[in-house]
Image 1: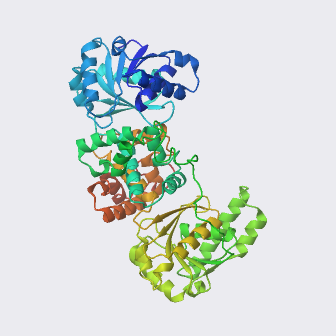
Image 2: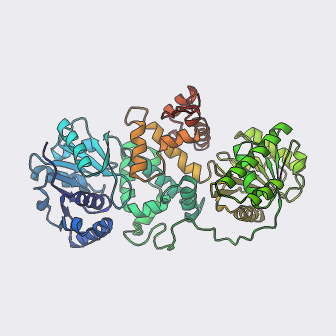
Image 3: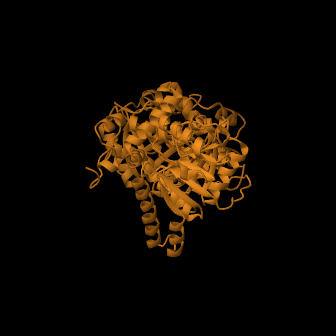
Length: 576
């Protein structure tokens, strides 16, 4: 296994197969691409050429054929067939019998057991898993899966092969979904269920995850790129193998595959064929900015001061109400300092800052909210405290005032029913830091009036925010999809399957996420993350939503992430 790799074969130029063919060719290898028939070969050729982006020299290294015998002379032979109908098993039986004794076999399986496939092939010590991470044209990272029986020399050769191709790699053991596949498929499946229940529109789901999490694309667009049939096959295998409910394919996914709505490969999917623009878009409802109004904000923490800054800079007379005069004055001072910092960075003009400061005031008495048109609660994330606050707002706020809660993980209806005017209560989930984050989730309950929902959308749009709408549930859109993914990533550490660095590398380098899940947990704060995950678990009751052991252990030890100097990763110079 010391000779450098010069040739590789890929059986099946589909989604994963075409990614590997392009990566191998771009890395200088001669590649044999085996398709089942001429039509499949033509589709595969188009996929590979698109991925190579016109690199003619690399394209010339690829031979497309329908003859599997052309693959048997290659040093590396990768089976990249769909995970259904025993296709992988039959192909690996044939390859195991036909390939040279020194050849390395590989499979792109996500849901199926690599150990079982190695046994099926008859090459139990010479078969590995190779999975390109992400849906980029040319994958930047490979997950290389070894089994308990993989020869040590084969493992070393596989790592050297990835390095020679200029690709990052993560070596992992045989586990359902490995790292990236398991995390991403559960997240995508949850997004389909969200759409299936009409909890939010496809556009709002996409916009929420792109702007709320900084993802390169939303989950439904990701499914369109992967292929709905490819995702369905992998989810089915994962569910059959694990029995975990998060992998049970959403019925809508099955229906769309049956209707041949497969995403980009068929020209119809969740977004493909539905509209030309796949990026964040404005909500289709007519949004007429309201006249400048008085805004009251109850709370003095980071979220309260951030929202106050946004409102004051947008032209609203804004009052911050704290528990004491000292807290209120400190909150107002924090807003002023933040605006002056923005001006010093060229993000605001000095004259605009002075005008905004003049619109801002503080108070220690809730009676200061009496004249406000919009009142936003931004106190601690505790259901009992929030209900108490809304009962008091009901007593002091004028009739017709719009009442909003900034909760990120609690049902809005609890706040609404603490008032005598539930039709005027909405969720206004701003993202932190509010002055910089563009997204606001506007949440309506079963009691929210159409007029109040429209006013809330118009108010937030006039603040310069991108508004997405959803109905009331724990976690809304972003947290309901994000935190189960983060929690599942933390669960990978429990049995020593992968290191924190490996998990984060797969998702950031491979899938193009702005930050790996464990580093993101550290940034949010493990205590905050644990509280949100507990709320989600309490609402769903699903065992898969129970907070990960390592997350609970770190919080119990006071290791809260970046703010304490240590979490899943060390953070030098922070905290204690």
